[in-house]
Amino acid sequence: METNYRISPFVELGRRLARQLAGGELDAVVARAIAENGWFTRQSVAQAIEAICTDLLDETVLRDWLARYPRPDASAVRRVGIVLAGNIPLVGFFDLLCVCICGHRCFVKPSSKDRVLTGYVVEQLLRIEPAMPVAPLEEDTPLDALIATGSDSTRSYFGKRYREMPSLLRGSRYSIAVLDGTETEAQLEGLSNDVFQYFGLGCRNVGRIFVPRGYDPTLLRDALSRYPMSHPGYLNNYRQARALRMLGGEPLLDGGFFLLRESDEQSPNLSEIGYAYYDDLDGMESWIRRHDDRLQCVVSEVVGHPRRVGFGRAQHPSPTDYPDGTDVIAFLRRI
Image (cartoon, rainbow, N blue to C red):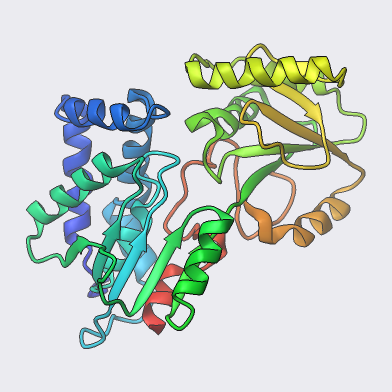
C-alpha cells in the first residue's frame, strides 16, 4: 500500500547502516562515540543499530505501521524541534524518524552524550536524500511544535518554556517484569537482557520484578547472574551499593555484579534490582494501572497491558510501541 509517507529514504538508511556495521565501516564512528560517552561500548552501539535496522527500518514494518494513518497533508508542513536523550545509543532516533517520515521540517538537538552517533545518522540520511529537511536546533530557531525527552526536571523546564506551543514532553519512567513461576530458562535469559542490556540505563530496562508469593528469589538471582557483565563503571556502582547495604545490615541477595533486594520502590542504583511479591494477577494488574504514569513497558506473559512485551523484547520496540504510550504520528498530524 502506498502511504505517501517518506518511507524509501529510511529503508535505504537501514540497509546502509546494516552494511556498514557488518563491514566494519562504522568502527571509527563507534570509537568516537565511546570516547564521548563512557557508558557506550562497541557491543551496545552495535545492538542499538541492529535493533533500529531490524525493528524500525524494515520496509514491511514501516508500511504496515503507517498504513493505519491517513495520507499526510503536504501543505501542512510544520517546524518541529526534537530534544534527544543520550542515556543509550541513538535513543532519540525514533523521534527523528517520526518527524521526517511525516514530511515536517526537523530541527535536532542531540544530547551532549550522543552527538557522534546522532550526527552520523543524520549525515547518512542527508546523503541518501539531500532534500530531507533536517537541521540543528538552535536557541532562536522558530518552531511550531516540540518533542523533548529527559528527566522530570527537564520535562518541567520545557513545559514552562514552550507552554503555548504544541509539545510532547517525556520525563523519567522505568519498566517492570511480572513472573508467575513457570518461566523457562530461555525466558529468564531474555529477562536478564531486559534488565542489564545498556547497563540498565534505559527507561525500557526492567528495574523491578514481581513474583508470586512463595517464589524462591534465589532462582531469580541465579538466572540473572548468568548475564555477562564486565563494564567497569557498572561494577564500581555495584561495589559501592553492596558496601552501603552491608554496612546497613540490609537483607539482600548478591548476584556477583548486582544486588537483588525485596523492595516496594524502584532503586536509584543501576546495580540494584528490586523484587516484590503479589498475591494474585488481578491485584497485580490493578497495581500496574495505578502506577502506569511511571511505567514505560511491562515484560510478562501473564498480565495484560498496552505496552506489554515478551521476555527479551524490552529493548526491541516496534514503531507502535510509542514511548509513554503517546502516539507520535497522531501528535504530528494534529499540529
